[in-house]
Length: 218
Image (tube, rainbow, N blue to C red; front, side):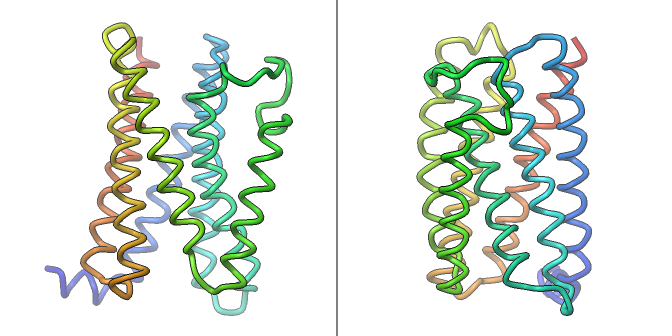
């Protein structure tokens, strides 16, 4: 089975990428509707996270097209993925930052700082020819997000069922980024480890999709 997957990895990667992008599109639409009903600020940033994840995965698919500028696309791919992680973290922390609820969720002083950080990380990684800074930034980010989401779950888990999906997704995201870093930095992109990362990533996005669908049905 593993041999068949490796032999057909390019085709499977194509379907995987657009499956994730499709899931992201559904989450963006549903969370946008949910925000329109609830006006909960955290939902705005959750929506933005999946908007950026969706764009990031589409850009990733373009990296396979040889006549397109690889370096530019690679920088954009990293930038969108890193920013998606920042938006997820901000969706948990937005109450701690003093920003007007009327300001754009895509552009406020704190988000601008995240944009600059994501761009710097992507540019340095591109110069180095690695994803090292992206890996370690996301491992740190999801470590923090896991702690915060766990505290939120303990505090309000019975009242808000979505919090358990959020916590599970943060833990799985941390595991996926850790495995991805190990596969890249220590195991020369081991096919088995990369496959595990793909499976975990798919579970994460499906978890969020299930949680959002369950909440919006009420």
